[in-house]
Image (cartoon, rainbow, N blue to C red):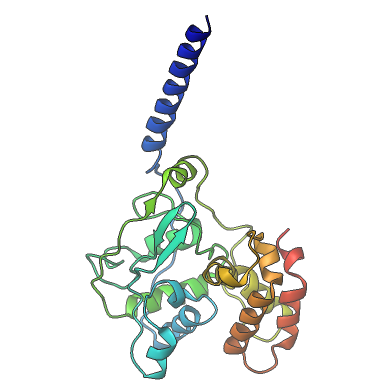
Length: 272
């Protein structure tokens, strides 16, 4: 009797494991629908300069989509290519940042402006698969999103074939059953007045600097507590607070203390 019970228990477990494995494999490349924002890249030098300011400043695209010593290249007056390839060793596997230069074979050269905008705002790749939510630009204004894409278009193309993400078993399960596209919360503004007000400070913190919280604080994980903190608590971590202060100084060196204090003191309230 015991042998029979063990036999049937083993068979049931085997069928369950086989079923989960098959379903997980089929769900790795689920296609999602999302609208295409009406965003068109501009060739206006001021718009491109604004995009570069965001890419190298508040949005910190350059921190992840590059494997070189960015500060050294900037100090030497050399170009910094967003050719990707940076490896993030996470509990779910190894994730690699994408090549976001205009190269047609290995970068974003064959994507339309609307496809890039949809990926950033709604988390859906041009092929319909999900974008990992490491770049939460969902509520970035149309004006700033246009500037970022305009700068990406203006870069020199760099041929760099980035490795595919290497997920482990847990990573594949999470991707199959938990990872879904994330879109905007509320109405996305057409533009946001750039000034020293608390309102602009809130916009920068919640629609741009949250990218820093999701990436830079992971990069500096050796400086954080052993147990991962919720995103809101990361904003209160001294390391991230220092980084926010430095970033705000880059954005608006003069008169930004009020916005800075608001960001650090109201992070919990904004995230509700």
